[in-house]
Image (tube, rainbow, N blue to C red):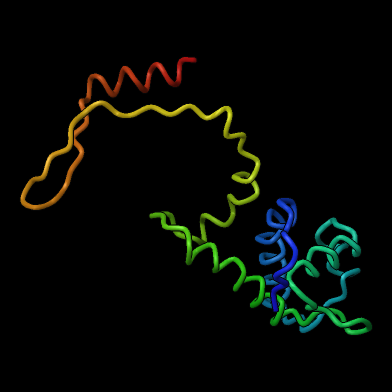
Length: 146
């Protein structure tokens, strides 16, 4: 049900995990449907903002009825699952999605990177990177003392 012709703004993306958490709480409380007005009072957003956010992904609500909590929870979960499917990491997505609001605000111009000193080795058919511990300490101390 996702629209293909519009880009979704960063603030909307940042709010998705929050919507998902609130909808999960509502679902667990047995709430079947909720209006944008009711959801806005719980989340501290305006009803208009909620409608605009959710319309970025298609028509989830119905005027006079509101939103089906279970359906909307699943759909937002599906959207968040796309990230899990296409981003490879050793962090569980259930933990990672809570950091999305912070990650989208990172200023890439302020990130400093370094390569750890060491060498590549293949031992028993497995590739390893063996860092030089003393030189690595120096790099870490330099990065975090600035």
